[in-house]
Amino acid sequence: MPSPDPVYLRVAADLRRQILDGTLPPGSPVPSRVQITQHYNVGQTAARNALRLLTSEGLIEGRVGSGHYVRKQPDLTRLNRNLYSHERSHFAAEVEALGVKPEWKTSIGTASPEIAQRLLIRPGDQVTRTRYAMIVNAECLALTYSYEPGIVTPENHESAGHGVIARMSADDVRIDSVVEEVHVRAPSNSEVEEMELRTGSQLLVIERTHFSGNRPVETADILLPSDRFVLRYRLPVDEK
Amino acid sequence: MPSPDPVYLRVAADLRRQILDGTLPPGSPVPSRVQITQHYNVGQTAARNALRLLTSEGLIEGRVGSGHYVRKQPDLTRLNRNLYSHERSHFAAEVEALGVKPEWKTSIGTASPEIAQRLLIRPGDQVTRTRYAMIVNAECLALTYSYEPGIVTPENHESAGHGVIARMSADDVRIDSVVEEVHVRAPSNSEVEEMELRTGSQLLVIERTHFSGNRPVETADILLPSDRFVLRYRLPVDEK
DNA sequence: AAGTGGTCTAGACCACTAT
DNA sequence: TAGTGGTCTAGACCACTTA
Image 1 (cartoon, helix red, strand yellow):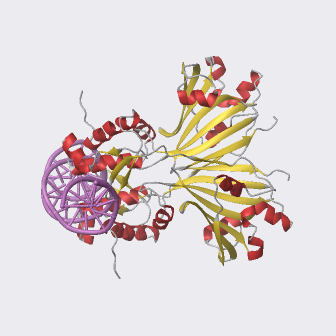
Image 2 (spheres, chains in turn purple, yellow, blue, green):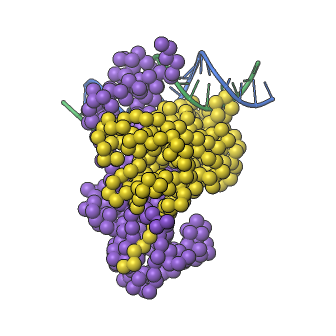
Image 3 (cartoon, protein in one colour):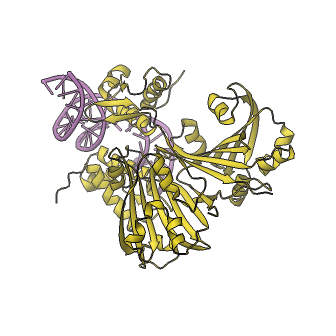
């Protein structure tokens, strides 16, 4: 029975087994680097690589000065994104269900090339940028950056939490479709700090655009830690 | 101007800048570990950590024996998941657009606890399991595992590529809604091999379930390399 | 004060690639 | 044959946590 795999993979496999079969229950400490070197008779680098791998898999997490611990069930937050309503904000409703109202701040700026393309305007055109931070227990759960062409007055924005659709409806702008593009990317340094992301954790990004006919009237980046969220889309089936 | 950051972060930041501003264009070689140690006057570990970080960010990729290279624009495949039709398969249509028909294989087995919960059956109940591999240029782009309660005869499955909705419609099972739950997880070893995933790359997983009324009639895991796909959902806005 | 994780140096071996 | 990335050992420093 040869085991030609790298040493750290065998160490990781053994620890993984202990975690999955309950020998190391959630919250319990994982053998430290030194303990691993002694128990498995390997060097610190191999021990380090094993711990790093399990961390990237989301099975354990390291606390500097303390140790590595088996992660508790990473209670995933399920975001229902099934249908949009004129009545209230989609995302706002979801967030309220989490028991948190977002903090938000608005500023006037100019469109970057990317935002310009999404809003079908020219780069440099004036846009209103709003930053939402979903904070619960002094912890930032999610970040959203919203962009609208032109200037949106603060008075209008006071209803921001109540949804783009309702707010624009008051201005006789009828929103009839919403597109959400979902992808995954590595976070920037500032995003890691702000959202307290685990090292190796990725961001689940929703690029959401509200359309009135073929005209985009608002677009937003919704940034979610990929290890804490599930997106739930309910899709219609047409009548043949 | 103090720079208290770890050494490898400063090296990575410098290389990242060169990649983003075009000094190191896509496809060009990145300084090797030894070159970095000499040029930046750091140890091999710091050089290694810098290269590892940029790899995890998707900016570069390593080829053993050759070197690290700036990744070419990782041309993202956009999967349109806007509406389901009785006419043809949703996913099949998407895949055809990529110029590839999936290879598939069916087997009979029993429901795992997780699959049982998704199909509202008992663990151990009989299920038909179908594995689809989307292969293009001898490269596996995506994997799908589909589960249906009971036994589906091979004859019925010959229309598999034509869609669950159409196939079941022939049996007078009317599918009226589809739920897609999207999340991100680390791949298993076998998944890394099969889909030739970059180290550190994550999987974008769609858990898709077809419903007839409240009854789930089919569920599937669609596994996509998270650095190659964007999911595009078009959502309806109800009429107030 | 002891132990820990994150980082670091110096040096090394292997399988692989490129020439 | 020389260079490379992936892996490895031995040993170390620091800021931090824990007791």
